[in-house]
Image (cartoon, rainbow, N blue to C red; front, side):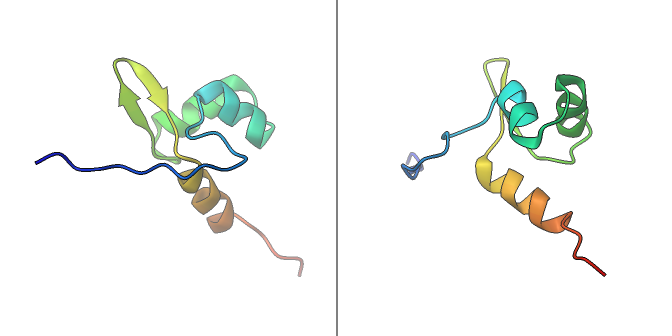
Amino acid sequence: MATEIQIEQGSEEAFYTVRSLAEKLSVSLGTAKSMVKEGEIPSYKFRGIRRIDPADVASYLAEHREEAA
């Protein structure tokens, strides 16, 4: 039995590419590639193409947020 996957429609992309992740985080493409390669931000690989779930990016940002002292 196949598992049904639902993607919410919204203003954000269904998935980020590594390039669009770099733009979203305002970091270099190399930095974004390293973050994904090292597993800091989880990703999926479909037929050799890497994709990042926006929910994983949101979780990463929430975990790394620093509040003013």
